[in-house]
Length: 309
Image (cartoon, rainbow, N blue to C red; front, side):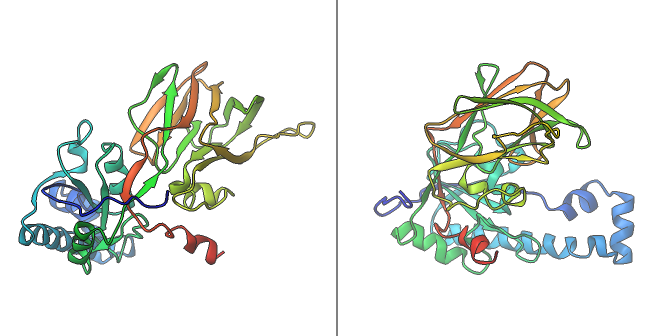
């Protein structure tokens, strides 16, 4: 199902999850000397950070006003303050970019998620249908049920028999902990098992098919598709070897296994913020989660990456 019919939605309580801007962290809080020097010089490396900070603060303020005038109770927290599954609100709103949306997704199971792009000058906001110009219209559309949420497939990771708490929305990267190191492992897909050496393995659901998976040669899928995929990045078979498992689509009922041959391997979940040790002999099982993400995204949002190939 691409969208969920919910009837008229009642928004009584909302949780606003926001990021801190780069400018706030490095200039206002840490007073980092080199960063401040570059800002004073107008260096090209930091020319947009102050603008992005102002846009972010303005959007956050506009959202809070939009909730207040609609008599919607809300509480706010930084994304790093999230703890445990959120279940006492009617909607979670992430304010930032795609990274904030992904971070927030790890703490919601049944509560819908809405992304607000708080700085369109610096953030693509692929998952974010709201911004400073339309936030009121989006909220009204959600309440009236003119805007319906989608169900997005997520992946579940089991490491050495224990299920990890984070459900994967974008991708998991299995690789050596050093980016220059060779990733060594056994990969098993649908009864086929291979010993491989590569730059690692990208594994992700449809929501993540427009990012690293696409860049590595994967297939862009509709965001509501019911398959997931894997791509071996920088495969390194020897001249006498021919590998079958270099990438492909898997169904919801399929699982994928990786057995580490690395002393210092790592699993990176949805970016660089969440990682787990994947040492020699560790086993990872990737499967689809029964808990899809309920999110207000455009069902056709991934199409732009196919249309502009």
